[in-house]
Length: 310
Ligand code: HSE
Image 1 (cartoon, rainbow, N blue to C red):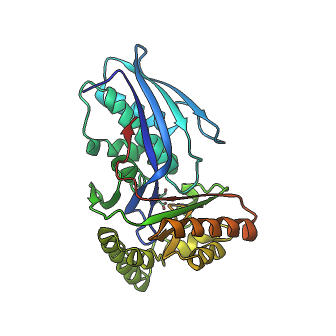
Image 2 (tube, rainbow, N blue to C red):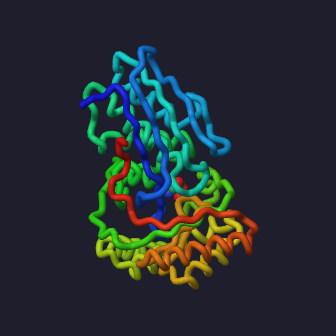
């Protein structure tokens, strides 16, 4: 049923999970963005941002939330406009799907206001356009898990085809986000266009192991399968202290560790919340010691709900 006013939360995400560059992501229980939207008599989007984060684009012409909302209005041409407030609760350039959380919260909110709301699956293409705007790349591995929740495989981009994985939600995901910004576009521009067959064989073996481990809830299998021999060796140069922080995570009991999305956040996997907290502490201390970087950490299971009205 369509509504006059809605408030939507869309969660942060870890994309790539090491070995699955651009084709997998999970939603997290902590962190995310909120959009409040209501129908208005003025056509188009009336947009504002409330945030304590730095360098957030606040215009209707440069913020992804406003952009994707306008795309939906252009397509569905309702006889009203939308007044939207983005409560931006995530830093940008964090590696935790900040732009995707804004886009997803926006499309879910605008959809709920439509006379005939679409199903969630029909909203992904709009959210992905927000990713294209933010980073010049329409990757879906943050937007899809933020929208649907759980662990989502991007089986194909052309056409866009996503598969929600029936995971056993038993693992704990540790996130350590150092206080630096990495623009996704920059982190993509340094990647190779061609890869070595030997590396590809290692990578797709790991990716298969990752999927099997997620389905089984097998932390050991997931941990060893997040190993990324293609992207991490290139991108880790953008993250001061990367090797030491990863070593500290493994030393503290992590079963695997890699870059979250385009970084700078790192994630680690474990089967226990208690060990997860120990890993988080070790990662935070090591970022401070090795790179003089402040860092936020949290430990989360997979958020199985994705974007929701609150
Ligand atoms: N898969 C994308 C990348 C996610 O790693 O560039 C960016 O948020």
